[in-house]
Image (cartoon, rainbow, N blue to C red):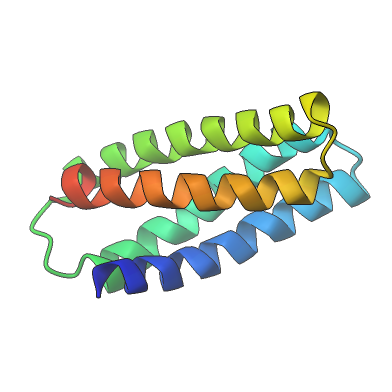
Amino acid sequence: MAFARYTLAGGIATAVHYAVLLALVEVLHLPPAPAAAIGALCGAAVAYVGNRRFTFTDTTAAHSRALPRFLLVAVVGAALNGLIVWVGNNVLGWHYLFAQALATLLVLFLTYRLNRHWTFA
């Protein structure tokens, strides 16, 4: 059940992530890789609130401990996300949104495990 809640909270955060990504690339003409990383960090802010209040409701971790851990996981996830988008777009020649979709799936599973077993444990 926690993974389903994590996925739902993450879906909302991902919508924010993609909206920022699209705005940065299509409107402000930033390169896709840094735009993806910035979008991921924006989504992470939404994800913390959603996961703290909806996914990991049984946590006893204080915000003073959980928030820095969550931010570290988010930074690692954002960096990995940006790297996957960069490799997909610049090395493999994929459209940046295809690379972003793959990055989303890979980072989802990694960050869930880290947040469940470390951040909110």
